Image (tube, rainbow, N blue to C red; front, top):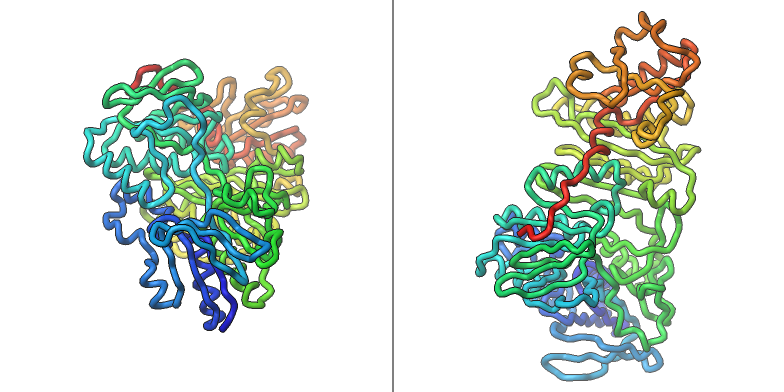
Length: 557
């Protein structure tokens, strides 16, 4: 008989560890404990079942205890909560709905307890009209409440991925939605110059946004719940969704002697081993190394959890397998837009004092002469020596594959020059001969080679107009349809013949629509003796930065 391996928790990390271990070792005795009824389900799909994009509930269940037994010969014990670890005896204490309390011994132990929604101590938070979303029972409760009650209005607390996905899906279900976020912007992985596009998309679909405001209290009022904000404003709704983040579900480990991080995450090495002999941990409850900045962090994502489960199983089976860190590659749909990010954003790099540069480009998803090409926005962050540090993309088509390509280059420790050299698939329905990824690399290379000095919209906004000229190099029609205050207009195609209109003793800050004509103008001007800076991302990025969500007033329902 082989080793006896206990796995605490299923879903992504635990279920992956169990299946991988069985494929590697047919003789191992594998027992999986799950406190709830469901051991392996598509938790990322839960909001879409509520919004009925996913119609069949059964499709959310990936594996059942019966299927795990039949295919992998794994003893799955549901409704069985592991309440403590006894490392000196190499046992766990289990509280079972069916068997009561008992101990189970192990040779190896894999911890995959996951993370649970944060539930702060706020007056009225235990109302039966307030929900969080973690598992299938939570989903059933929310869906039943929406379906069986006369629900017209919902307030979502928290603008992370779950909060935004729930906002979209409740809106699709016909509910009036207000989203409240305590930070200045939603979706923390995205910088403010990018996420404004998503905030506008939400407001365009009648999701009300309240930013820079938290929650002070909840109060039941008949069929309604009243939400009092930190600002003193109040909101009323039929239901509230708490989506203010997650915390590792590791309370049962406090007396085990296992090393935990400052926020309760389990500390592991690159083999996913904990500080206890024979004990591994994976998934949302563990600390990981940020692949880009090498700091210890926590990144609760399904992809990393699956990989970590596989790595833990490898090491138990005698295969030296290592986890090299998380880069936080993530994506979500927001009505007609897709938003994706990988690596570090500008805010993180600045906080850690990591030298960096960035550029914006706004290429099209495929050749513009082929029907239905749509524009996307890409932000690329890179070090002064060209190493790629992160990227963000937003658009209606083609965002996913561009961020995936850049994520791959980051994983291979590539540079902006690598982006320019990538040979990617091209046909008019799918891309352009110069893919958007190539274009981002070209623009970044030009910045590094000092062929173009870029300036951000924020810097343009704060400039001293007495020592700069603001030049719009778009066409007259584009200029007349909207331009930055104080700009003069000389279209790029007229620039060479109108250089005499500009003063060589004053810095010229110029822009076009998306940056390309601005770069051409910058090259013309610099080679004719002018001091020039090109606004990265052009007028399109400036418009995104100038968008301010309309603040919802008190007593809106």
